[in-house]
Image 1 (tube, helix red, strand yellow):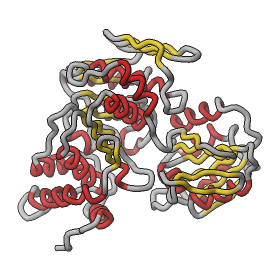
Image 2 (cartoon, helix red, strand yellow; image 1 turned 90 degrees about the vertical axis):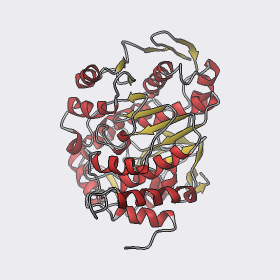
Image 3 (spheres, one colour; image 1 turned 120 degrees about the vertical axis):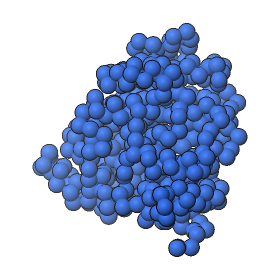
Image 4 (cartoon, one colour; image 1 turned 180 degrees about the vertical axis):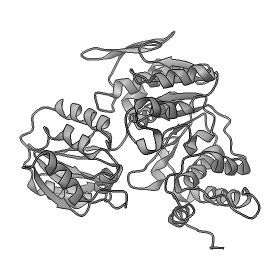
Length: 441
């Protein structure tokens, strides 16, 4: 038997070695360990699934509930730079030291929950999810927000019964696990719904499978455009739910053309939960104004302009392109791009081609990634005269882009959490002319 790890890095390395498959959807193994841990929550739980918009939805919910005076715990994934980013309690990222006893508790339960002498085999995601859920359950919280990692029905987060499900936009991603079309993917994401509990769907064109599943299990379905909707005015926006109206709202601090869809779903969830978690109008205003989420159309201060976005599927890239279009004129736009090999790389590139003048393609530190050379081949197939440079990692790609730009130009870093996280390894990147500097995050 290997010695018990005493550091977070040690536990993460241990978790990586436990299971043969990186992604192994299914709840039987993780449920067995959860039962052995007697893991449960006594406060309202909000579970958020969807293809895009999950992180923004969680961030706005957290900010509003905190502004209302509630003590809130959040689990989201993946992280950008440090594993601890996956969990926040009362707005603060957890300390590595605080996670250690919960990793030990998962390991102890894993060893005792198996059949006979065999321990339960958990994937890295399952092991770390259980540890973070254990930490959250040990806190005195008023609300817990859980972001689904992949899909919904068979994701490890779904071992916890939600008090309110939120499903954000549904599009084509992870098709090898979730199915070939929006109906199949919607059916998987609808698996987070629970009978007689509110299920908020902020996608204005929800697949029929989502509506059918809600009806089949008797969930309280809130559909965008039917049960709630928003009005976009030039300087403000308004929202109407089943019984509540919210007028003259300032636009959320989170940038992007899609954020009102996410914000609208957040307000529907708050109305659905008002008996358990009442929220005043001022808390809504403060929360929308304070919400932050690194790497989601994040425009950093300085010149030249630097934009970070973790978009990694064609739908997210279409939103990014729309947001970039709305920024105004830049003589030259450079891109730093790295992506996973299993993504629709041509679909992402095709949408960005009209906006990008120079491409800085990079390798990423994971075997799942496409190499810079492979990305270049995709790009040249679409645009034979594309201006391309290849780099061994995102930070070197950003340094090369910074050396090539003028003050009035723009750099966009996108394509994966690894790409954006890679340029943030030394802190939040800042551009001062052709010099790249980093500031603490």
